[in-house]
Length: 122
Image 1 (cartoon, one colour):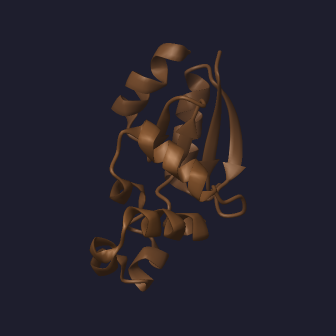
Image 2: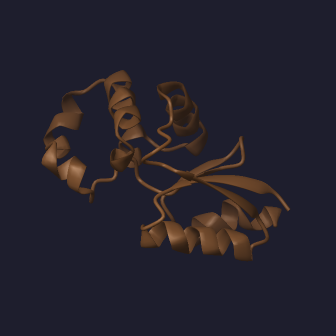
């Protein structure tokens, strides 16, 4: 059984579904409240690289803060460094949940992706 760290928001239905799936697959889950314990820019750089996703996939595009800040129009003008600092400044901007075992990282919840990455380790 592997131990996974899940950065989440406890009131988020997607996060609850993801945690339930991971536990059912036999993983021990350590839940970290994403809004209270913000990842550092260094953590984010590492996670983004390990996720294999572009940095823009890490933004919670359906969130209120993203919309209030008009980030749809602002992000294309920002450097990757600026985007990482922005993500590190407000947990509500980060797509959730973020799941890591220290090597692999997923962001968001897609069952097929979880089966591929987290299912084989149960």
